[in-house]
Image (cartoon, rainbow, N blue to C red; front, side, top):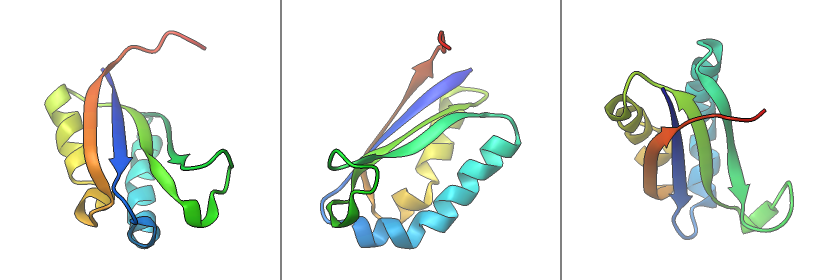
Length: 99
């Protein structure tokens, strides 16, 4: 089943986010390589592709897992969680319809 991982950044975490980014991306690439990643990306804090020092408000991941518990376990082990970037992470089932 597919799951949405909706993570919200804390305040003033851009430096921590940038430091943990290579490890975060490696996990996403592993999901992609396994054919289990539908989409993933950050949410800029301003209306710009590159928000610069404004940073991000969080990230969104839609990926396939065996269960809600497995999705929650994967999300809780994210390097951004370990680095204190995310202040909240919500995981819920998702049913793709389009495209």
